[in-house]
Image (cartoon, rainbow, N blue to C red; front, side, top):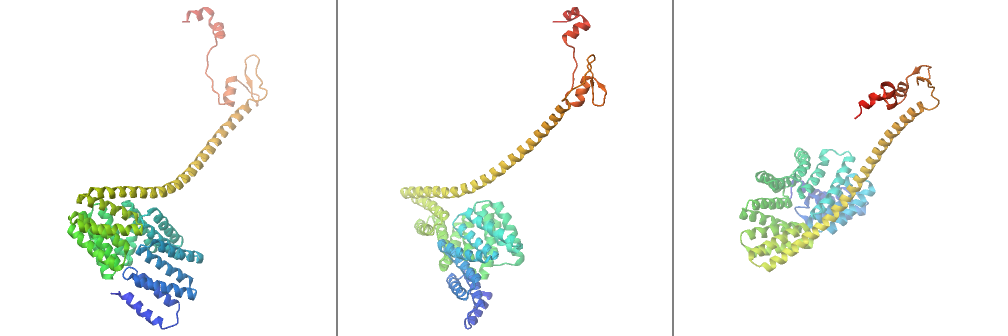
Length: 449
């Protein structure tokens, strides 16, 4: 059932088709493609392809890029990441050529979503932060930055940096609730619910999921409805209420199947299988988890594949088929190791850049400190040279009392003159010769040890 906005635009589309093709027709097609992407993806793809062809024939490069961007989203949702990367790349190339900052930021966001879908959080964060930077440099307000904050929050939530994720969700939530952005709120509430679920605050999680479900069902957003239903399934599975969890998962799976969303089908199938394992419906469990595993391998979603392999291992342990359990366990260990290595390589590259940056900063600091130290030494040397210079040349000294005549003609005790003209100080004693001359040799012997 189309929403009021979609219905109005579809009516306008029919009117425009009866007129010579123009810019407005392309814009309406792109708008409809965006709105239908979750509810009726086939229509979305058809609208986007038509918009791309028309924009190309009319020489509307910006709209051609916008059509490519929509097709990129379509293929991300379908789990076809190679096609998604192709269309996003084409859109980015056009936007960069036109220096369209808004378009460049939008494509960065889509590519962030694509990499996040594959469990590559480092690459996702790279594009999300790039989008935020472009928007900030363009002077965008908080409402325009909200999607960037949200996407960065998702990346941190995926690597269990929950408090950091919440710190990015908060400005997004504030902006979208003020603007009454119903299209975005179900996604945000779902993610907030997931975070509170991970933190063990299950009642808060349930409230957010139900808020998301109400909005998405009322708006006819089937993909969001399916996502929320699967989240509620996760919640009740955590509560060990497996029948309730099974009911929510099945409803979610039915919607994903109607949408043809392979990524959703893969994940929820494995979830259905897992609760069936808990309910001792082991043959049913095997059917669903196998389906999930097959799809995740074809889609190359490694994080989901690891989950499926883990669930298959537990299933066969419960079945008592230890040979198969061991086989899946070995495959699981290998896949986890490979995945860890893949992520480690990327992490090492990131750490290397960080290390090189820190190294240069430290070298600069050492250089600065050395220069400061050298300056201080030079100053001390300069002062010493000045002191030495004060004592250079001929010093007029009395042959009898050993006083020295200064530059102004006054006679000073030698120790006073040196103290005034250098940093030297004096302590007084009596040498052995003077001691005998003053006190006599017998006194010296009587007081020696």
